[in-house]
Image (cartoon, rainbow, N blue to C red; front, side, top):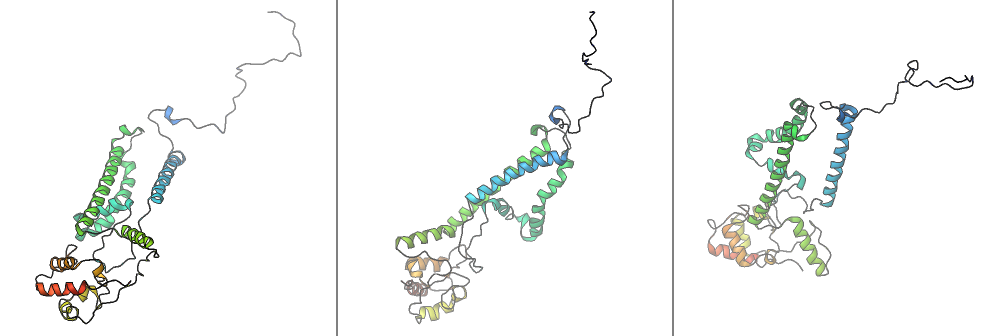
Length: 290
């Protein structure tokens, strides 16, 4: 269409090939999910995502640990042969694993170094065992299977370890130390007494220390080897104040049949029934100091 040319008219070229397109130096990286079969860079993309997931898991784990702290037992006593060791709940699966024959005894080195090194070895071998570029877990059989087996194994070993611990408590007729501490503290508060401090309890004095049951019969039976020369305790528990804990009949049964799977041995083959009754009568007189 003819028209008069205006020298002041601005001419705009659209899509002119003479104008060079500028390169963007700060372009946003492409979304790798748009390219099937391709993977993103390990550093920093993948590593940053894994690190963030690890932080979330660690925070959740720390929350559980703080919400359910390890119970506080009595002061450590290496001479207490009836004590049942128990680790924190998040180590139960490892504790149970070390109970098996192939991880203890002659194989203790394998149990300590080998089993603890398996997770690290698995992490080192993971990139070589699973070389596929697929990100969906159901299309990564090796990685998914290893993760599933690990989770099932941890849950199972934790369950077995806890059941075994409860079974030992039931068989030995024991109360966990932290529960026993709570019971003693509640009893003291009800009586208007200060809370007992473990390891600093008042030890009762011996009653009738010159009785033949102690000076002759118990000495001959080597009772002092475990319970101390003055019944203060040593390899075994103290017998001072035992009369407030057990009745004469219970003491007779303990001496006769033993207790705690042999920790307290049976003396029915070494002592007569009269000697056992003599010892039980004397021990039932041992009362705690008021």
